[in-house]
Every structure is written in C-alpha cells, then in structure tokens.
Amino acid sequence: MNKVPNNKAWWLVLPMFLLVAFSAIIPLMTVVNYSLQDIFDQNTAYFVGVEWYQETLRNTRLHDSLLRQFGFSFSVLLIEIPLGIVVALMMPTRGWQASAVLILLALPLLIPWNVVGTIWQVFARGDIGLFGWTLNNLGIDYNYTSNPLDAWLTVLLMDVWHWTSLVALLCYSGLRAIPDAYYQAAKIDRASPWAVFRYIQLPRLRNVLVIGVLLRFMDSFMIYTEPFVLTGGGPGTSTTFLSQTLTQMAIGQFDIGPAAAFSLVYFLIVLLVSWLFFTTITHMEKSDNGNKHDK
Amino acid sequence: MATNMISKRNLGMFMYLIFVLLPIYWLLNMSFKTNDEILGQLTLWPTDFTFDNYITIFTDASWYMGYVNSMTYVAMNLVITLLVSLPAAYAFSRYKFVGDKHLFFWLLSNRMAPPAVFLLPFFQLYSSVGLFDTHLAVALAHCLFTIPLAVWILEGFMSGVPREIDETAYIDGYSFGHFFIKIFIPMIRSGIGVTAFFTFMFSWVELLLARTLTSVDAKPISAIMTRTVGAAGIDWGVLAAAGVLTILPGILVIWFVRNHVAKGFALGRV
Image 1 (spheres, each protein chain N blue to C red):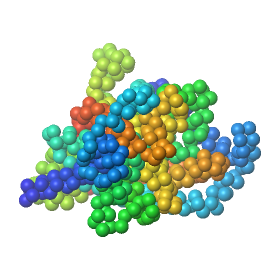
Image 2 (cartoon, each protein chain N blue to C red; image 1 turned 45 degrees about the vertical axis):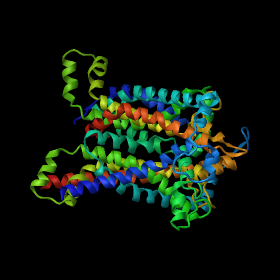
Image 3 (cartoon, one colour; image 1 turned 135 degrees about the vertical axis):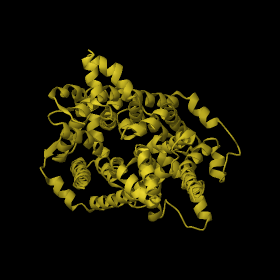
Image 4 (cartoon, helix red, strand yellow; image 1 turned 60 degrees about the horizontal axis):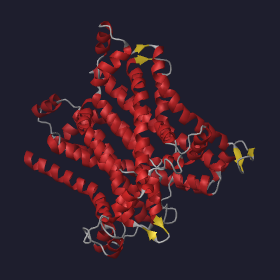
C-alpha cells in the first residue's frame, strides 16, 4: 500500500510514545547510571567509569552463563520452530474441531510462568509426578534434581511444551491466509505433498516465521521464572541462565554496578542478533522479489 | 491414500494434544487430592476426592483478593493498551512520517530488555511518582511489552483495509474521529479480538514486574502462591488448586474471542 507522507501522524503516535517512553527510557537511563558507579548504599556512590565493563569481560561466571544461554536458546529454536510448523500443518482447518484444537493449544500460553514451573516441578518428579515416575518405571534413571543433564533436558522440554503452541498458532494463521487457488493449481500440476509444502506453504509462512523466531529468541534469552521455580538453577549451575545470574549479582550480592554493566551488554547482544536476523530476512525478501521480476 | 494421510495427521495432532494436556491434567488431578494422597502414592485420579483445597482459597480474602488484583491490573492494561495502540497503529499503517521506521524498531526493542536488572529502576521510578503498590503501576509497567505487540498486530490488520474506504468516508463528510469509531474500528473487529487476546496473555502470565511493583494492596495471585511453601513443607494441594484457578480466566478469554481468533488469524498477518 502506498503511504502518504504526513508528519501530523505524530499526533496519533504521541500518546503511545509518551506512555512507553515513561517506562522504557527512565529505567534504561538508571541502569546506565548504575553501570558507571560503585554503589555502597543509597547515598554513597563513586563514579568508576568503564571499570565494570572491563570486569564483565573477565568474569568467567558471566561468560559461562552466557554460553549456556546461547546453547539453550538455539536448542529451543531448533526444536520449537520445526515442531510448530508440523503441528500447524496437522491442525484441522474447519468445523468445531478447529476451534477446539485452537483453544487447547493456547492453554499453555495462558498459564502464569511460575505456575508453568510448578506444574513441571511436580510432573517431572520421580515419586509423585507422572512423567518422572513413568520414566523411572521404564528403567530410565531420571532425576532432574540431581542429574545436570536431566535438569537441562527437563527445562528444555518444559519450554517446548510451553511455547511451541505460539509458533503453531502463528503458522496456522499464515497457512489460513493462503488462497485455495494455490492448492488447486498444485493439484493440477500433481505436485507431491513435499513440493506443496516447499514451494507454496513455506514461502508464505516466512513473515509469521520471522515473528515467531524473533519472539522465541527474545523470550528464551530472557527466561527466568520457569527454570527458577523448576530447578532453582541447579543442580550446580547447569540450568542457571543469564537472567538468573544477573539477578543473583544485583540483588543477592548487591553488585549492582557489574550487573547493570552486563545487562546492557546483554541487551545489546539481543538487539544485535535480532537486528542481524531481521535485516538478513528483509534482504532475502528483496532479492526474491527481484528474481520474480527478472522472470 | 488420501484418507490414510488424514488419519496419520489426526493421530499426530492427537498425540501432540495429549502432550499439551497431560501436565495440566496432572495439576488438576492433584488439586482434588489431599496432601496425604499426593505425597503417599502415585494415583492416576483422586481416590479420596476433596474440594478442601478450593475451599481454602475461596474462604480466605488474602487468597482470592490475589485473583481480583491480577484481573484488575490486566483489565486496566488492556484498556490503556487498546486506547493508545489503535491510533498509533493507524498512523503506522497509513502515513509516512519522520522517524517512523526507527520508532517501530525502538518499540520492539523494548521487548528485549532483560527484566532482572531493570526491576530495581522500575521500583524506584514508580515509588518516586507515588504509584507503588497500585494496580495502575503494574498496568503501566506491562504496557512496555503489550503496546509494542499490540501496535504490531493491529498495524497488520489495518494495512489489510484498503485506503479507498478512508477516502470515501472523508468525501462523505465524516470527521476523522467519527470515521475511526463508527466505520474503521468495526471493520477490524477480529484484529482487535486477536490483539486483546495477546495483550491479556502477556500481562496475565508476567510475574517479575507485578511482584516487584506491589506489596500488599495490589499483590498478584502468582506472588501469593509462593506462600504455600511454609515451614512444614509445601502445601501441594492448595498450590495445585491455586494453579488451576489461574488457568480459568485464560480459558474464559479465549472462549469469548475464539471466533475472532479463528477468523482474525485468517485475515491478518498477525
């Protein structure tokens, strides 16, 4: 659609801008302020410049949790995106079944995050939880409170349970937006189901997948409440992700300066990855459109 | 072959739904058990069926007020979000203006701020303006991530409405406000339904900000739930019942918007 240049449109955006800016810019500036000072209590603080930033470069604890975080986020994306697409393809398209499946799928999304943690905390227990109990009775030695790998896998499974629905719902909406004519044309051409998926459905899903990948990346990178309730970050530090490390530093040890410095670094990492992803995709889109015109 | 494929599809869907529902069933199952039964042996359904856990919650004001508080700030957030996002999304979908692209990306970047360290500044900010421990504080803080998403979704729906409709309305003598409320909003009803769903969802499930910005008067249910962990161990039954009750409002909301969601999903790009 052709948009009309009109700077008066700012008046429509202004209330939204002021409201978001109030909650966004002031706290951000406060964090920047923290990151440059050594704070002892409310009235005593010294300006230390970039010292905290230098320290974050040397702090191995932060580096470890950053690496764990990347590992976790990529595992999440690797599982949830394909699984979400598959689920969306399996969803019924009309009738009461469509509504019913839609509602059931949305359920995990509507549960408060600490309740999600609680559900899995119980569900995965070896003695009173169905999941842990079943695994143990099948002869698999599974205990998420003492085995780091089990704990990590449980957090991952919980996240898949929690968020795959979002990807599936987004993809479902993308699939519904494909006109029937495309499928009819494919039928006439006797296209295989794989070809239909690869050349009709997948390209049409690109926009919703961009949103899905971005949302999942950002949210999994900030994950805090669910693993905190489920495992408390343990055993050891196997499921202590970045948010939790930062919270421990900021509130537990009152190292606000370094924690603030690293949150800003962290914020920039998320921003950078999202931006890279976003530009790559829009770039791909442009070159695709260019090819279409060439033909 | 076609029927074979459909049944395979249904089977896959069925299996996935079981995966989604089992943990929730386990919570529901536990909420009807006594603590003795929960910790005693593993039972697939309550043998000693009891409503005691729910009665505990519904007869204690410090419990059920948590639900009232949570719903209050979620409702306030929903109203505020829709009021400011509708005109903003209209501006993004219809006009080019100075800094529009940057503004859009800045909006989305707010979703990326790590909550952990931002909690303290949030606490200080809302304390200094005298909003600490009010529903409004939580509602405003949640706007930080609900508004960007709402603008994003609404903009998609609005771009699907042809410009000609706006122009025809202006030629017919409608003022902007009149046109927007009487003609435009009804046209994107489904989009508003979808937006309301996502706004509700992200505000309802958030715990960290809600817990930080409240102490007594506006304390959300998810924060109250942590007190089931007492000196005598965890009161699993009440915890499970409280958990089940946090799912119910979500089910109600999605029930009301289900047709919009199905239809809205089909129209917009979400």
